[in-house]
Length: 112
Image (cartoon, rainbow, N blue to C red; front, side):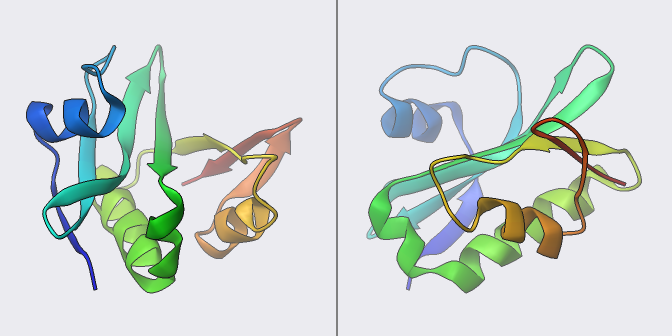
């Protein structure tokens, strides 16, 4: 099973192959010390946006994915979060619903 750690600049760069283009709070999923997923949030104008990116092998750990999402949401507190479901992942909308997000407009989801 993998582990989740607070993201560092080095881990983000190792995962993406380049530095993040914006400031964020994030966690990194590691398997044998290698980043296989990044998830977190960033401030966009007046909104906090949650994001995640996973390599295919990270999908073997659905409970870890869920717990990480809940951890990020706890970090944010009562501030509304926004997300966009990934149209290429069948379970993306169901996952957002399970986390408490509600579709508000087009592809935008919100959770408070």
